[in-house]
Amino acid sequence: MANTKYIFVTGGVTSSLGKGIIAASLAKLLQGQKFKVTIQKFDPYINVDPGTLNPYEHGECFVTDDGAETDLDLGHYERFLNVNTSQANNVTTGRVYQSVIEKERKGEFLGKTVQVVPHITNEIKERMSLLGDSGEYDIVITEIGGTVGDIESLPYIESVRQMIWDLGKENALVIHLTLIPFLAATGELKTKPTQHSVKTLMESGISADIIVCRTEHKLTEEIKDKLALFCNVQKEAVIQSIDVETIYDVPLKMSEEGLNRVVLDKLNLKAKQELNLNNWNSFLKKFKNPKHNIKIGLVGKYVELQDSYKSILESLIHAGAENETEIDVISIHSEHLDKSNVEELLNCLNGLIVAPGFGERGIEGKITAITYARENKIPFFGICLGMQMAVIEYARNKVGLVEANSTEMVPNCKVPVIDLMESQKKIIKKGGTMRLGSWDCDLNENTISANAYAVNSISERHRHRYEFNNGYFEKVFDQDFIVAGTNPETGLVEIIEYKNHPWFVGVQFHPEYKSTVSTPHPLFKAFVKASLANK
View (tube, rainbow, N blue to C red):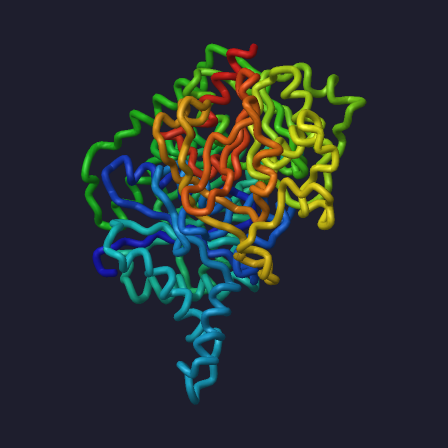
C-alpha cells in the first residue's frame, strides 16, 4: 500500500455532476504520463449490485469480464483507459454489509458488538486498498457515489478520512466536484453552494485538496480567488469544468486547467513522460470532422432514458469516428411500433439496432422492426434479446413456425425456439445468477462476423438467462439463416446471420461492453460501415 497513491473523488451540491467522467479523465491524463492507474466506484445504495435495478432507476448495468454486474461508470472507466475492470472495482453498501454480517455469523467478531465504526468502515477501507495492495498500480482513483451530506454516504466519507490518516497527506488527496450555478435573473455565478458543500465535507474531518467546479460559464479570476479563500485551497487547485460538446473533450479541458499537474505536485510525483494523448486526439479529430452522415434506429423498451443504452451509444461513437461518419441515433420505443407505423418510422434509416431488455413489454414491436429490416435489406444488428427476437421473427415468417416464441414471454408457448438455459432452471434467486461475464465463441469461416473480427475464436461478455433452444436447430436454420458462432463447450448459439441480406447479424452477447476509444468493437465498426454503404 505504501507505494500506491490514492485519490478520492467526492461530489457536492447535487448528484449527476459527472464524478465518473472527471475520475476517468484524470486517469486518462495520468495514464498519458505513463502511470499505471485504475478507478473504483463505491456506491451507497443497499442493493448488492445494480443487476436487479430497473434501467429507469439506474441506467444500464455494465458487466465485466469476471462477471460482475456493476455501475455504468465502470463503462466510462474502461472506454477511457482501455483497461478491464473487475469485481473489485465496484462496491456497494449492500456488499459491504453482507460481508460484515457473514463474518459475524462465522464468529469472526466473537464477543464484540459489531458497529458501523470500526467494523463497517474497516470493511470499506479493506476494499478501498484492495487494488492498491495488488502492487499493479501507481495510483488508485476512488469515486464515492452520492452527494456529501447524504446519510447513506457517511460511512464512506469516514472511511476516506481514516484512509488519509493511515496513508499520510503525501500519499492521498481528495478532489471535490461541485456545481457553480448561474442565476439568469442577476446574470451571476454563485459560489455559496460550493462553500457550503466544502464546509459539510470539513465537518466530516476531510479537507478538499482540489475543487473541480462544474459550470455553464467561464469562472472569472475573482471567483477563483473567492473559492480558494473560503474553501481553504490554493488558487491553482480551483479547477473549472465547463460544459463541453462531448465527454471525450473533458480530459483535454482538465489538462488545460492543469488538473494532472496539481495532482502530481500534491502527491510528490514526477511525470514519467510528457503527456501523450496522440491516439485520443486522433479519435477526437475524426469524431469532430466526419465526412459522412447516417441515421441508425435504436429500437428498445427504455429509450426515454439515454443511460439505459449508454454502452451502445458510446460504441456507435467509437465506430462512427473510425468510419469518419457522424451518426444520428433515432430512438424508437418498441411498445409504440407496429405494422401501421413501421414504414413511416423506419424507412429513413440506414441501419437498425434492436437492443437488449427483459420481459414481455414491447416484444411484438421489436419483431415487426426486424421483419421490416430483413425484407427491406436495412443493415440489422440484434443484441442479446434483439438476437432472440430475430430468431423468433425468422421462425414465424419464413419457416412457418407461426407460434414460435420465448418462454420468457409465454412460459407455456407451443414452439419455444428461445428457452430458459438448462443451468438456470433450478435457480430461484434473481441477483447475480444470470449467465454473466466472458465466454468463448468459435466463429464459422466466411461469415460476416468472422470477417469483422478477423480471427477464428473470440471471448465476449454475457448477461442473460434465455438462449436459442437447440431442439429447434434443424427446423429454424437453413442455407440463408445460419449460425455464425457457437460456444465450444455448451453448443450455445452465440451468433446468427441472414445471408440473403447486405448485413444481418444477431449476437447473444453484449459487444457494446468491450468497445473503447482505442479499440472500437469490430462488429460495431462493420455495422456502421454496412449502414454507410446502404446510404
